[in-house]
Image 1 (tube, rainbow, N blue to C red):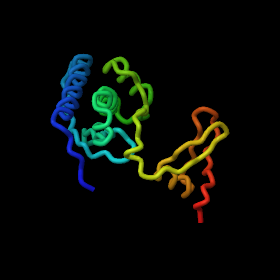
Image 2 (spheres, rainbow, N blue to C red):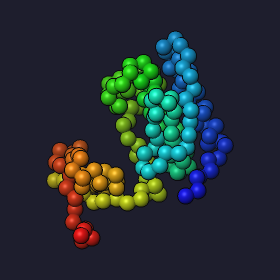
Image 3 (cartoon, helix red, strand yellow):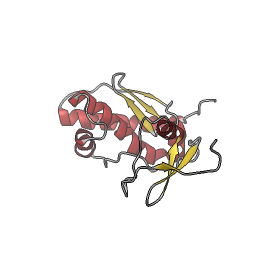
Image 4 (cartoon, rainbow, N blue to C red):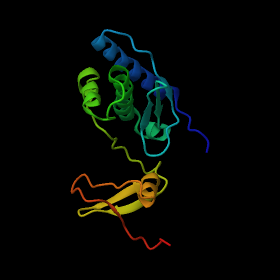
Length: 171
């Protein structure tokens, strides 16, 4: 699959946001943080990913192209906050109180764990699951974890364990 070409204006927007948020953090902590490496290689439905030890942020090029400024304003600070929390506190819960504090107090950005972008273009296969109150769509990765017995997922609304829905294609 050929990598998507990110227009230079979008790349500049990403870097401008990153540098502004790094400056905010530097001012808050009275220090200078190194600029993390940025790559546009995140795949799947994740908007981005922070590689802590590598001091790198990976961004989803498809979701960036589709959501542009909203993506930059939400995802870049989100991933940067993970790196800053790692630098300041070490390994802690990914979206725990330190991360929420970093987002809201230091970076002055709403602390949302997940994005709400339309991910139809990046979603390869989805698997229907049910709980007591609604239908859910699990990614192939989560579905395979359930099938292998590695994990269970619960509905955030009703708390029920998600169960695969019969689709008629199972063998």
